[in-house]
Length: 75
Image (cartoon, rainbow, N blue to C red):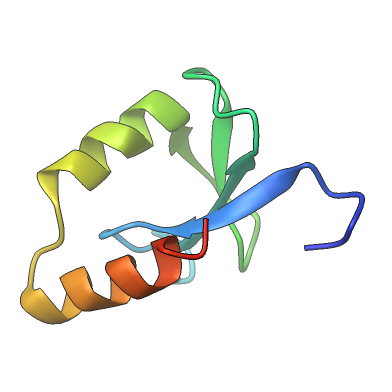
């Protein structure tokens, strides 16, 4: 992320269908209809409000939970 970039990265419990990365990128404004993209390959994933629902369901395992907590704590 560059200093003039108006987006932020976060980790989701599900990976990108194209590359498998769990790191996603969204506008720092966090509007419900903002598009979420894979931070690795830039594939469109879903809308931000859909990503929030996925994150509310939580990780599939304890190790996923620890990774998400560590990555998302920075934001």
